[in-house]
Amino acid sequence: MKAWPALLVFAACTSSDPQEPPPTCGTPTLSDQLATTQNQVLSLALANGQLYWLDMGGVGRVPTDASSAGTEIATGGTGDVFALGGTIATNATTVFWADGDFPSGSVDSVATSGTGRATIAQVDEPIGVAIDATNIYFSTFGSSDNAVGTIVKQPLGGGASIVLASGLSTVGPIAIDSTTVYWSDMFGGVASVPIAGGSVTTLVPPQYTLPPSTILDDSPAAIAVANGSVYWTSTPLDGTSPGTIDAVSTSGGAARVVATPVTRPTGLAVDDTFVYWGEVGAITEQGLGVPPIADQGSLSRVELVGGTPQVLATGATYPVGPVVSDNALYYSSGDAASTLFRIVM
Image (cartoon, rainbow, N blue to C red):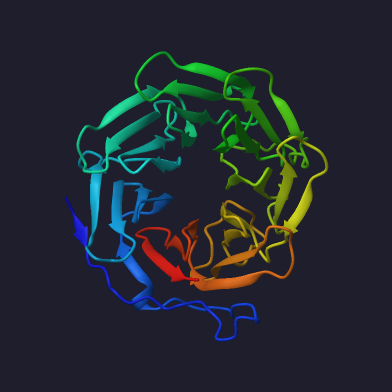
């Protein structure tokens, strides 16, 4: 297994005055780096002091305290692209991920030790993955001109899969609470379905229309659920307008804008106090499909109720994440090889 060096000292993003908000952290330094991967990172997950990543060459992990180097625990074959899209989740003993290939994608798992790799499902374009103590849940995409996306539940201990929702268009990552699966689509809509099965509920209807002669074959950036609300990144389809970080009650009702990033938002995380997000930096007139400008991305947070955002890190290239712990934020930067960063908050 490959390993990369890791450093031991981290810069803190804190204020000396407890009555004042934390300052802008700015550009991370070498002391903030946990590891450098050999491929572009697609998704991150955090459990028991380990940061796990899914990249286009494999799955890896690195201790969040940098006590040892980053290590790959699953890889593709020689010369193969390991994953073309998708997300990662872990319960600290097993890592689960979606390889969003089309038409031969899969949902897979491997023990955190790197043993026991297995394919859970062979499906077209799996994107979102979430787990609880009993089941794995995953979404499949379905493009804007072919509404074949699904939400699927499958027992972790083995057994038949159950399709909870079907006929979906441009469904992306998913989030779960104790009773429900939530997802968003590229038209700005949000929906849910009970874990036990039942009818799909539209929490937020589509907000955007598709430009003429355009087919969407990508996925929304992120969604999360906390404290009875669903949070998601919503990006207009004109290709140049900034997106928003929105929220709606898990029972429905009026949606609200929590934050308006300066540019296009990417990943999203929540805790009991804040919403965190990444954004790519300057959006060009060429639209959303154009690679981001290097070193122009950032990571920010705002209180769940809204307010003035705080920039936690700058100088990122297409940041992936963030994921958060009690005292730190983790993300990756890079559109080829990626560097994993920890910012102490």
